[in-house]
Image (cartoon, rainbow, N blue to C red; front, side, top):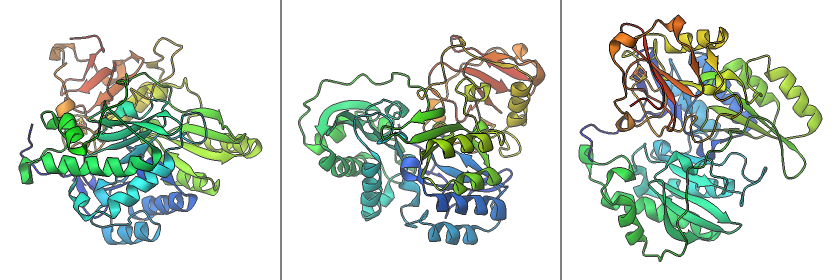
Length: 431
Ligand code: SF4
């Protein structure tokens, strides 16, 4: 397929004009942030934005209602969060957050950093669409299910499957080869895609795209095809690291992290990972400090309980951020959670990486990075709509301000879609 509109993914140097004001998206390759970078983002959100950091479904950060784009760019540049004006929007790299600390075949964070360096050093790759996604999975299967365009998936301590358009090509590479091969695949995508407004944004939009890039790479498949898609629990709560230290996984309701909370996270002075499930992982803590962190941050709204209702819910931006929205979706979701109308699924299964925040792309209200082509027509008759205060849903659910359903996760999710009459609720098995 081809697009008739240019790629309009926002960045720091190209803001999105949302209904509530200019919006900046800051790429965080591999999701990794230093404490100083978290502090910079908190300061920027408070001084220049609406006071909150928005976590996206690609582990990036958005700031809304940006008042001074120049000041923001200068601050991010000084913090190492804007290393290249030409490449800022192509650094969409997601890596298994717990890699190298808790399980997994290999530590892919070094490869994520190497891939970022390789992208920045290659002038032609600045032409990649801002929608292209790289995934680096350490073998646990958490980020390969995001169906990135180009990725690796560890199948051994020094062996990785090359994934293209979310599927295994059968090609196998070592750690030493992985970055070079991913960069070559990115060039292959550029060789194949159309130009200008006719250019495809994603590899899967090119007929036979994955196969054709595999041919360009001129390597022989050696591996049995991997079956991807097994659900993984998202990292929430107390996580024992392989080295005896502790990581803490914290859910962030609707991905909205107040600047004040971010300041407390920065003050912990440990590496932080932003996950593609709108949560964070604080790493490398001793047990005592980890207990203190939970005691401080849980009352501030971070979620350390994998069974919490908030972890069942995703939502688009809604009003006031998106002009298309029929309502303030996030306020309606908060009311539903507060009044006990968001119920557990089967009561035993924690939310999964396959389903939380796994939508791939950008959206109109930028309430989630979503691919509008992924939207399906599953809307029941309008007369079935109910008022917001009557919506009660069990299990994974996505609330949207209109039928575009931006940010909707993949997999079995109940759709709660606003209309002029109220909300339409469509269970996952409704067709
Ligand atoms: S689903 Fe509709 S209301 Fe929500 S962000 Fe997308 S376009 Fe806006």
